[in-house]
Length: 271
Image (cartoon, rainbow, N blue to C red; front, side, top):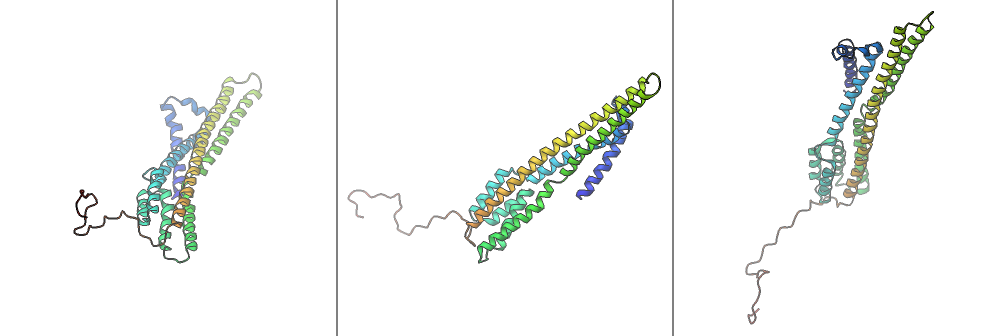
């Protein structure tokens, strides 16, 4: 599914890039961009692809966060675990969804499975292993397509540089021809070089900024997963196995004929 998305996006980007090059540039009055040559099609496709991947990463990371804000969700789960309500904490994770909720839920479910084990040290080791395994499954989802963004930044720069070199070669050919150099050929070669340079730099800027932003965001998110998991493990380790959730105690019924705590005696009255 992941590879098919990227493959389809690449094909669509090049098709749209070709349509923009042959028809769209004239419609918006940017026909001069065509002087950059057919390499402009690749630059337009890479630019569209980088924008598409940035949008995809934004939507994916927002979905991975879950429904509520992470601090609110973690506070509710921590309160439920501290109160001994592990089932309630699992229900909160199922409601929250997202990567962090999936990791915490994996640890809580493993704790429920090992709750009756006599060797509590081994039980907590199993809980930590379940959390680590779930984290290894979730982190690649968070980092998906980041390598593609970094690759587009490099390829965009190289394609722009290639177009620059081709344009400069045409300019020098005009210079090397006998007699007075052809001004039209000379200017066309310089225009081709500059247009490709601008296209490569624009594509690289968007891809590099997107890559750095999402890499920082994923690192922060991974750090939150580690911190939250460790906090949950510490709370579970201090919990007595098989203990019931802590609930408010109901007031004890008063015996018949017993005096109310608010009842007072008057002076001289027999006690």
